[in-house]
Image (cartoon, rainbow, N blue to C red):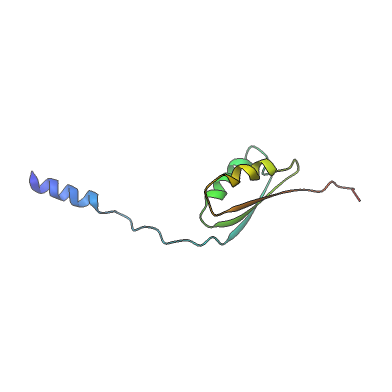
Length: 90
């Protein structure tokens, strides 16, 4: 019984996968429709991605609330919100 315990301990103390290599944040991603029901969770998932450096949020209604929510996450990604200008305005 002791040898089985030693073998089990040996297998559980060794990590099966090496730690992942460090990633650089290189991607700049735009989310169109970021204030909608699909755009908000998508923006949150992209914000947590270790490869995304900057997240640009676009919507007709305005996205400052979504950008404010994303600014409270502890990631290295920056989120900026943009709205479209009104058509026909001079």
